[in-house]
Image (cartoon, rainbow, N blue to C red; front, side, top):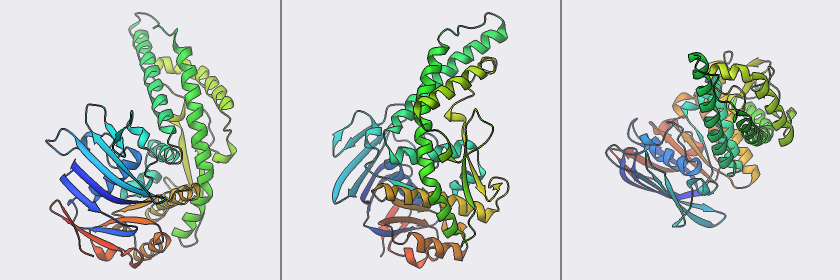
Length: 381
């Protein structure tokens, strides 16, 4: 799989941009702030319908423009697909596949798969649980695009249930009434069923990912090894390997319903849902210690990189090698890690690299080169 052509209109800093690509490594070089990351961000957006830099779509539209358009020609198994996305802040985004409109943008998911590693990924090790949940869900959706709908339905039910709890909590504090909670049992059922479906998918994906993480960390850290993944359910005290947790939907639904019943008084008091996949965590270990709080800066970088490389390996093993994107990562790595990373990914079908200094990019990734400056992209090699 590779991106043959990218076309942008009013995306980020670009009034318009055209980028012709080919299989193999491609390096985008230019000073910081010139738009290198904007280009690879657009490619990743086609694959995920989200940005690794911002939580909402509004910043993706160029200042003063009403909308942004991203078009990507994707070649997969000798077949070319044209994916077109129209980003409209405050309105519903629109999408087309091979020039035919689709009812929902998420229907284009799966046309392109990417794995992106960027400086922001340090938060996977050192940041909040939300960063790790997002990582798990993006991997899940990349493997099975249907889970985008499951995630959206779960978020919708969670929002409705939180609104009901918030109203009840306010009524209780104001002593006007105890709040109308007659429909809470219904929302519990919806939340438990959708939560079980999402959780089962997460656990399956993470169980499959775990051996790849151990292998990737061993390669990146030059044989130090010790990477371990554990999953902590919101209603349990102990984190366990994903493969040791149940994935039967009926079992998970029953567990979630039981946990919701136990915390209901606290939820009504606080006005928020306290149990479910939205409060779970992916616990990363190095040996017997949690990486968060104990890993050095170099170890944290190696762990974050191992998570992305493992994702790449897993998706490749599933069928359909993803496009690998390395966004401004080599400046953060010492020379040995640069060369090691180059050797690990140099054989990928397509690797897109951004760098402020061309010399930071290892020899194994010195393929096609593009200079990016003043809003222009020019191929120089």
